Image (tube, rainbow, N blue to C red):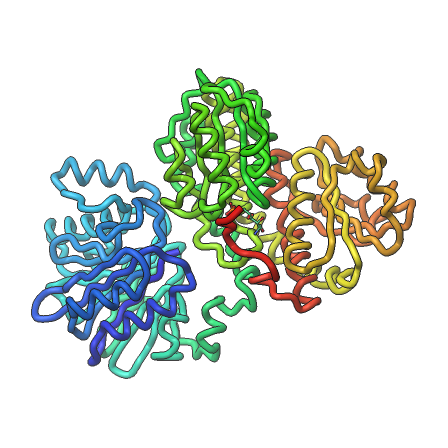
Length: 607
Ligand code: AGP
């Protein structure tokens, strides 16, 4: 996610802005910039790459002044570049923004047809033009101009705005992206989160959705988007800056588990077309008329999401799908046809084996679609089509929010393909889309019940091994649960198709082996229940992940973790959450290094 910061007071703004941006580096970014007002106008200095590059640029091109705004950009629309970096200045108005403007295509077209000239590929520059337009049509001050502009905007934003003609104020507004206000003595601050300004003040106001604040040196006013005054006392924050970087969570993995509902909202934003029972994939139009087969290549967690993708795509489009480990595909002399669509999934977009598989597929004449979380990373750049999850930077080595946003992206792709082949009826597409929209709330519900997993983790955390079992599209989730546990707790764990138990693994079962069984309501429920009772009959300890309202499962399981009901197609997205939390709490109980487990790297850029 991007980082925003603003300052108005008696001191030079640039050092305060740069220090604030440095504190926001943990959020991940690919460019940075500031806009500082002095002698009648604001001066914008921006730089692609790390913050140090901006600092060096500012040494050559200083930006003096006592009021300014700053930004670290995590690219979602428009590649990382100086011109796409924020702040975006149009006329007298400079803007920094964290979030996604859902209706950016429509607004951009309207602005361009009204004569607006764009200098960047970003959705943010649209906001600058809209505010500029408000002044052109008579807005009497910056607050009113921002209010007028935001009435046209749909989506998530936390913006800070500077007006060359009003150096005594900065205006900030928030909707669905984090933003806090810092209260000082004769000076005020705004930032994405406490981290950026904790070294300046501990008096913080947490803004809510649909609020706008006008900051001056000697005070501030907080209103809703209709201009109604809001009274909210500042809170005194006792966190250390280090604690604040994780928003108070002890580990990035915990923070990222909790960010998943938001990450899914951002990944769905602007891509669901309920009016036509369809989706829009950022302009990607895969021509299914000459696709005879889909081949998915990936590694690790991304391989597991590919396995779920096979179920989704075959079920909705009836296009045959094969899934292969990228490290296997690239060396087995695979059959590659011009009628293949190869889908490469990679959170980092830099995994060497996946890159190798993509290069081989392209050499064989196949079209490649990449699904990645890092804009303009190597694999999407090499692919013919690139589709991005909007999970924001994933710092913890164990992938969580990238995984669930990959699953959501695959559901969108499956709907797109199914509607194209005609195999997915509009009514069914509408039902799945409606459930996708409701999923973030159900995800939050599951995550909020995580304390139960902490108890289970303490009860079974000393086990020598775990087994994870699931059927159908939950078999890949069993694999993912096992991977999560082993990579951060170092306990051996295996994921198995529940139907395979009797073909060998059942020999492992005894009273010392916890077996996690994914057994939500669905077409395979009875089959999994019989596998589960086979485990119980041999004294295995069963930890069941079941559907809330299942009153029978308690009699045949030692532990029951309930998740809300959802469509069978989307169950993997909810079922994985308790497994992420179980692995986190077991690792925490054992005291391993959760965010940077031994021997592992976040991105495996070597073979
Ligand atoms: C997942 O928790 C692991 N960190 C690892 O398996 C990871 O999924 C794998 O290395 C693939 O990474 P990528 O998605 O960036 O390509």
